[in-house]
Length: 354
View: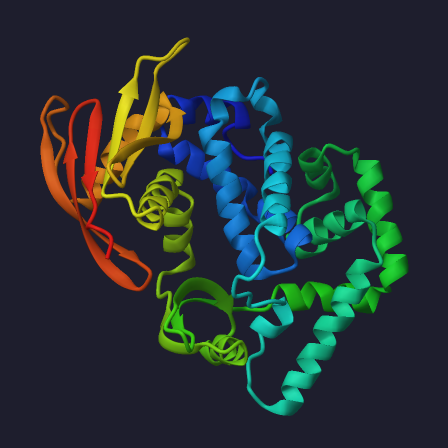
């Protein structure tokens, strides 16, 4: 995980307001964080979502990190906790369950049977390993980290990691280790879908699969009718740049939660807290204001700039008030949100709940 700039330098630069610095940390650790999430969840879609949430949690809590040089191990603990929370969350969601099901490339019965059997073999093989060994296998054989890199990330010694991997190879046999590696590394694409059930309830999601037909088949089996399916046409570099920008995730979470809570207005304002200012986010729901989020002050300027970018307004003069409109997609529909941006606050007006 070595790079030209140390983790400590990148943490300090992020707190000073550099989004690029945190992007470098994301690029450095994204595979490891995904590996931890997949280790806990066993599902590509849910692991990717949990990995994004882990980086968001890390970004919003960077100011609490006492030893920036230990960022990697600190991030591991956040990733593990985030994935565990995801595993415990409410059931009943539409789940495109196993990696094997999601990555079926062809719809023939024979191929489906072969893929299902392969997924079952891999799942059963990994289940025979201890949690610590399973994580080491994923990070080393799938993500390609060295013994020393795995050790630094999970807070173990290189010797312990080497021992775990040796035991894993003995238990799984070399052929099965290669099978695990090949299966988890299969090429895939990212798709966004919208579907309805018999009652008319609409669900939306983003998932990773080898083909749209595989996702359509899984949703159909669960009683959903697909009404829209789009493939993410961004290059891996473009996707990494956008998804690795934590402030994009902050804005997305804020707007999605406000719409889910049926809020009609969001107010974001710098608060003169001690020992340093913070930024409070409030929602107006049914005529009452609710404080729903408090984020570190270093988030304010990137957040203000992101809102301005989304609303296509210029902030050349930091003292100016600007207004614009954000087009935001939620539950399969585009919503127009009016935004007013001030030097130390912002207001977002949301459409009235239907």
